[in-house]
Amino acid sequence: MSEPAGLGRFGEYGGRFVPESLVPACEQVEAAFREAWVDAGFRAELHELLTVYAGRPTPITPARRLSAELGLTLLLKREDLAHTGSHKINNVLGQALLARRMGKRRLLAETGAGQHGVAAATASALLGLECVVYMGERDVARQAPNVRRMRMLGARIVPVGTGSRTLKDATNEALRGWVADTAEAYYCIGSVMGPHPYPWMVREFQSVIGTEARAQVETVPDLVVACVGGGSNAAGTFTGFADTTARLVGVEAAGGAAMTNGTPGVLHGYHSMVLQDENGQITEAESIAAGLDYPGIGPEHAHLGAIGRVGYATVGDAEVVEAVHRLARTEGIIPALESAHALAWIIREAGELAGQTVLMTLSGRGDKDMEMFE
Ligand SMILES: *Cc1c(COP(=O)(O)O)cnc(C)c1O
Image (cartoon, rainbow, N blue to C red; front, side, top):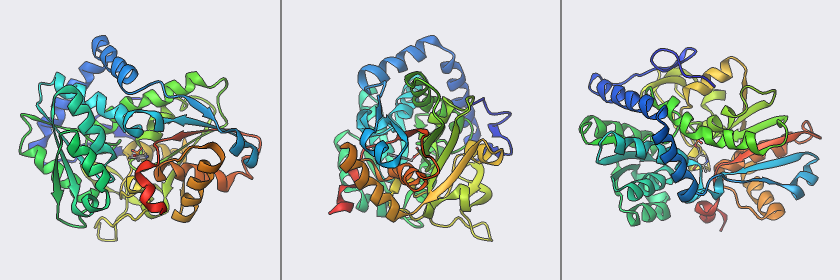
């Protein structure tokens, strides 16, 4: 997949819709990333961290028993085995290294389920940066184990009490925090969203998933599937297969399906498909998987959907819970609820996919979700 045109344009989506006061900060991040991404030294340092610290490359596991049951060949790209338990570490290590290179002292991050916050706190501890995590008050209460992990890693949590007191509000507050402190703070966004250059930069940092997978499979799979919240694990995966014949499918949560049920609009600094009412008010997403509980989707996905290169589908909470149990019992892998969305779709479509080779990105492990299953 290519670099966006102009100010981060993917077709008609993307861009940089931020207050005047944040334009220089975004430009600074863009210039630093452009320079770093073609610097062999930066790339080598990131590769080193991904390898000796984060545990890459992650393997591809053939799901043999489940494949036999479904009548297809299912291959799992195991991001659940990366340090901190999901793909989020790939992006955060890249941005934390960039922040240090820019001379910043502090990483600001927003988080919903806490997975991005934990990854940001982890990378900050590793590189000796301060970490401030903005989190909706409701999520602070719902995701107590991840709040404890972040505090243990030395992060300061800022509970956000405005609006619905969830991710959307935490993101607004984090942007405000950045406006107040652009000299010392670096804003570390957790998915392929936000103002240019973030959607492009985060995709580049996550492209390691697809690049590895492409080299690990013997032949190009018929189908490549990933779950989509903001869309970073999917974008990173698709990068490895966009120029092949593989069919690409992104699976959204039925209650947070910005691509399937949204309309074009602006959210958190970018133009994309968003869930909104007829007055342009952002509506609440509602999913069992906190990581998919977001009313927008990255602008490159909106573009890839518009041109038909990627297909988007939705699954409901009940199918997802069933998919978690199914993978646990057949393969001894407990997936994150987010990742189980991709699997639920494959299970539902198995009849149509008979005989095909399907590569699925298992974006994270399910330990964080155990309370749901008591
Ligand atoms: C955050 C998260 C997601 C959703 O984010 P994307 O940017 O869409 O990848 C999916 N799976 C897991 C395990 C997550 O933590």
